[in-house]
Picture (cartoon, rainbow, N blue to C red):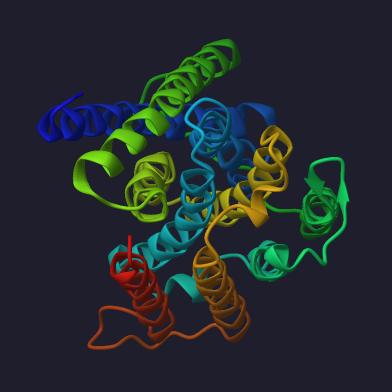
Length: 337
């Protein structure tokens, strides 16, 4: 059995690999946006959001098939959703050219609104699953089929919305160096491979970490594994903010949450012992509700467009997001093992 120090070192190495690959995704993602004529909003919402969510996808499938730890899979996805929305508050705190919610594109309201629908559905499913009132198709919950359908509708709606708005194409930023489409695609693919490899490794580390520290799989999945698999979102978001691509950063975070919820359906399909929702702890519903409330707050802020800041540092919406994040952390930490 590995010592706790060895496990923490493995966790740190895995997180570092994901973080480095995530930074590369920013550079090549911005290049692909400019070279293919796509807007930064769309490249962040679809391309970057999908790839930066690959750790959650690989970790989730690996958790339910190899590690037999469905609570880690569910905790990872919902914890990542909450953490991603907390990153939005971090952007607002670090962005000094005005309120994030006043300068970001109004098109993000659509993706945040779909996030509210998806996360509310997940919370309701987790609460109802133990009552055996939800029908199944084989071992798959009907809720998973609803999640897949909702994601497809969301992507179609967002595509039409983006076309109607006619967003400006991203301007390329590659630190002064020219880059071809082939180089951008190859670099993007290599970064994605690193992320997938690290995502396969993470569940095993999570199980060992829970055993060594005496923590529940729910706590480890929601806090530690979710943080590690959200490092690409953190890295790519920070990189996008550095080059002034606010819409790419926000689109990446909101799009990642939509894709993360879709991952729950994939996990349910991969979990052959029955519906995954009826197996995991109901405490996960609190994380889903918190993420739903945070998404709703972003919808309100992007509609209202507040410009005031508390002590000229952070908006009230961002303070609300951070408060809900720390409440979620406290709830998970204080639960009995």
